[in-house]
Length: 112
Image (cartoon, rainbow, N blue to C red; front, side, top):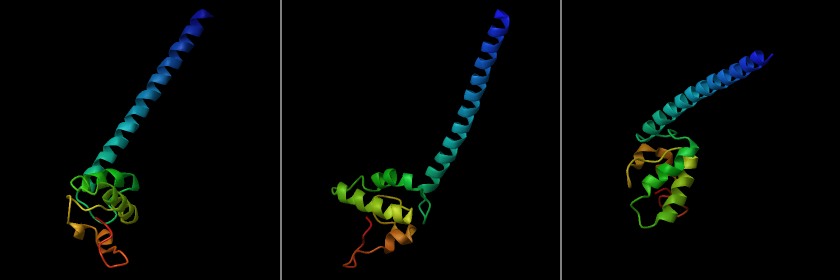
């Protein structure tokens, strides 16, 4: 009886180890796909981002401005609507037509 109990415990441990390894493999593949998306994002383009990628892309875009809070606020607002942030710190808005064409009530650019 004791031998059957030990065998059952060993079988349970082996099963948990196999499940853990399979889960790790799935998570690793998901990370690789996410990394590919991040690299694709750097090229810009309308709708090339997912909403969770807006914050880091806007942090990059607004890194060199002295008006960080308003830049981040409007960049995130524009990114969430357009799913795109132009490359570089300034300009390049042609990469994202939605981002580029969104204007304030006064006709100025809404997106930094």
